[in-house]
Image 1 (cartoon, one colour):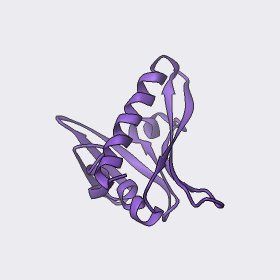
Image 2: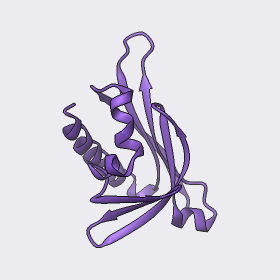
Image 3: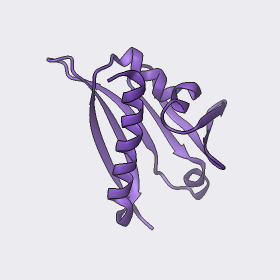
Image 4: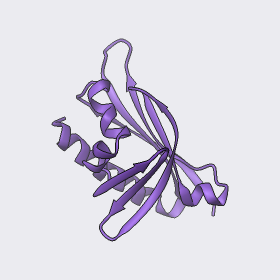
Length: 128
């Protein structure tokens, strides 16, 4: 089934320097994205309760963005990914977290709500 790309922007009261480790390190991701995260090289394993999923780190630009692809998509030859971008407005210096992901059309709203819930956990953690 074809997936559709979507992106959600969240204004955040935190500097890119402070925010980036929460998006790019196992301990940072374990604080909000999943219960635990292990990494071996470019493979990150995300653990939620009794289930786990692995993702491959595709791209990382310090303080700016990080992109992962679920191993299931990697093995299927799919080009889907999920990405976190830190966007800084040049004029106001306001910081936003941009989440880019793919979803099956019938699960789009559900997936957006899931991201909102996860990102709210992140913001609570960093006091934003």
